[in-house]
Structures are given as C-alpha cells and as structure tokens.
Image 1 (cartoon, helix red, strand yellow):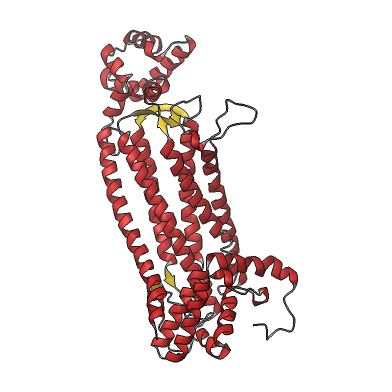
Image 2 (spheres, helix red, strand yellow):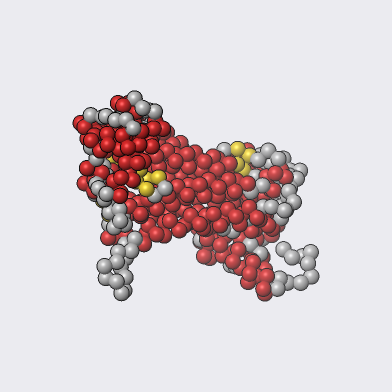
Length: 494
C-alpha cells in the first residue's frame, strides 16, 4: 500500500485520522462495502474481464469475510481505511494475484463514493419512515380535535381562536413539504459513481449500469469527474433535514409552552418527565427540552459540510471525501432521536378541552370578530371600527373589567365619546361574537379553521401520505431485493 513512500505513518496521524476513520467505517460501511465488492465482481465476471474460476474464488472469500463479520477483520491502521483492510483480508485468503483482480475497473475513490451514497440512502429512508409515522399520528390527532377550539397565538399572544385540528393541519402541511425535500435528497443520493475510477474512468469495458442495478441505484453518474468530486447531495440532505428540524423544534416548543402553568391546556405524561432533587413540585419535561435543542446540532452539521466543500478544487480531495461527511452521520442520528422522542411525547399528551375553550373565548381572541361585526352591522369603515375596538380594550383594562361584561350599551357610550355619534349593534350579536365557536365556524373561507374545511384539508393530507408511503415502500423493497440477491444468489455460484 505504501510502496511509493519511504516511511511509515506517524503515530499521531494514525491516532487522529486513520484509527477513528477505520472504526467509524467498520460500524457504518462494512455491509454496504461488501455488497459493492460483490456487485462489482459479478459485473466483471459477466463481462468476461475476470474468469469464472478466479471470480468464484474471490466471491467465496468475500462471502466468508462477510459471514465472519466486521469484528473478525484484522485491523492494521497502516492500511489507512476499511477498503484496504477488507482487501488485505481477501489477499490473506486467496493470494494477491487472485484478490488483485477485484480492483479492475475501479478505484478506492469511486468505491468509497458509492458506499457513502448507499449509507446515505439507507439512513434517509429511515428518516422518511419516521417522518411518515409522525405525519400519520398527527393526522389522527387533527381528526380527533378538528372541532375543538383553542387560542391562536401571534407574537406569543392569544389573538384569535382556531381549532386544535387546524393547528395540527398546519404542522402537517409543513411536514409534507419536508418529506418532499428529503425525498428529493434521497433520490439525488441514489445514483451510482461506481466504476468512475479516481476521476477519468477506466479503459476496461465494464458495465456500470449492471453494477448499479445490483446495488439498488436508480441511475449512474454521467460524468466521471463529477461522480468523484461531488458531495452536494450531502448538503441537500442536511439542508432538507435542517428545515425539517426547525418544524420539529417549533411544534415541540408550542406543546412545551402550552403545558406551562401560565397556559395550562396541555399535559405531558409522567413517563416523559423527570423531577428535581431539591424542588419536589417540579416536573421537568426532559424529552421536550431535548427535542427542541437537537435542531442546533443539525444546523452545525450544515455549517461544517458547507465549509468543507468551499474553497476546494473540483476533484477528489480529503476535505471532500474525508471531512465533509463527518457530522452528516451525527445529524442523521439527531434527527432520528428528535422524531422518536417527539413521537413519545405526542403519545402521552392530554389536552384540557374546558381550559382551551375558556381561553379561546376570553381576552383578545374575540376582538377581531367584534371589528368585523361593527363593519357589517353599523356600516362603518374597518379603520374606524379598529379605532373603536382599541378604545374599548383600553376602557376594559382601565376599569378592570372582564371581556364578558362587554355589551351594546358600552359600545354606544364609547362611540359617542370618540366620534360624537352613537354606533349601535344588537346585543345578541355581540354575545354571539364573543363565543369562540361562533367565530371559528364563521371562517368558512377555503383553508380556514372551520371544522369542515379542516376535514377537507385532512383528506388531502391523508391522500398525499398514502402516496408517499407507497413510494417509500417501493424504494425500500427495491433495495432489499438487490441486497438479498447479492447475499443469497451469489452463494449458489459453483
């Protein structure tokens, strides 16, 4: 491996670079790298580049290495990485003359690029699966609470009533877009660079399409330099996950805040909480707090990968191949952890419907309906109605009144003070406007919070969820088929 060089690797280079790299790759990449080896060998044999005899000898040795497991690989950090570690295990079994034929028509660079894409594909499929599960559970919640009133908050103030179903429908629309972005990133990952060599391909008549099919790739990279030099699918994946995590963060934050005593309308189950060693009354919502924080780790991975892919040549280099993906795998772990923890939280949530209704019917959440009522009944401009309602709110605060004490007589009194004329509105309509249910059900506009419109939204969301589930199942089945073919059919070779 180091024939060109006159010295061994120094201990610090091994300790800080090659040792952790090999250990991480042994855990993350062993199975996929073995599959790449077998797929490439199958293609070489079918094209007559490697003889049947040599090919079957190599294949049997590869199967033995895979069956023994990564823990039985003899690790020599002077070999630098998992690629050469596996190659050395193959040489030990069949000799260098036979084992060396596996390297025909490829390099370490295109093999590593293929393995990283397969690792990315496997992990993104898992994220997609979790995202589908989250969407399914939120659809159930939205269905259950499509006509339960809750305060809508703007600037952390209760300003207009909506329904809990409408709120969850809002988050579901965002999550649906997240799935589309992650799906696109997954598709960008699932393209094969295998057989492109270090940058300029190979003179051997290989069949890249065959190897790609055996590995479950949907296509092959169309430019040999680009296939080795590009990791933008990593950035695309991280960017999509970063946006997804911002939505996870906001949903978790809302539920977390609404569980506080000051709001008191959401209750987390005790299984997702902890206590204090000094304050026995404290209930710490540890899972919700950790979910909120995890989005920052994904953002850090975006920054790291972006920096590694900047100010470098368009070709293979350590910044790109060795460093740019370093925090990508950790970001995937954080996304999985955040979604799993959020799912745990949601499954223990209890919503206090009487408290939600009371808050939705009180304070500022009803005054915009009064503004609309004044415009419709008293035939005044919306600007003048806005002024009158603002003055009304100040009057209520100054006299320490409840909004429930608001009546037609008070509106008449204040209109005379402000405009010099009486503005009259029927008392029964004021009473109706002060009721949150009346206000919500009046918003019959498309995409609004009225229960029937929320049900319409949920029907669309369910349909799209079903389509996304079918798509993911097809992708997973295709990958399973290719891996099963490599791990079973090839054992039957003579």
